[in-house]
Image (cartoon, rainbow, N blue to C red):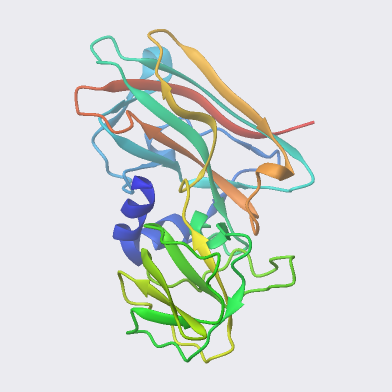
Length: 274
């Protein structure tokens, strides 16, 4: 959840950095960034907390940092993949934790948010009245299964056929649904933030909820070991978010930690496996 909040704060400039002019790995379908210049660290390519140790062919990351590979590889849901890497604490570091995973990208190399695919089953309905960008109360026809959610949003122009063909749905309201209240024959969805969307009555809508910001497969809040240890995971179609066409490697290093946490990283790969 914290990562979702941070991404919201980044705004369009950071999304442009992540998506614009996306670089793709060679057709061998192996992404193996090794040098500082192959990573963004805390959304910058000039971060001073990411350094190299040539003797161990490794990178050293100091303090709570988000590392994203600049390059991506194309992902085919009909194929199998593996993400892996070796990690250890630096000699003078306090205990630390990390995440290892994939930032999924759509067909235009734009990051796919968990909110855009976080459809809540049973909440498909329609707008009961026109909706405007400044609204903080949105009227829907059936809110029986809607619930207040801090990271909840209204998705617009949805597919209620059961196929959810609209996913990933980027037509999302402001987040934080604070209350659902029945008002006569309709339901009022009360938002903490402005809706931000304009749609007419009758538009199909559903409740969405943000989860983990990215697809963390290789490690989730895992302790960094004192000696080099591999973290890895193989994955197939079931792990893909709807609309995923390519992916970048993401590492949350020294997660939630302080500057005196330092971890070392080497041989991180995202690759196709037979």
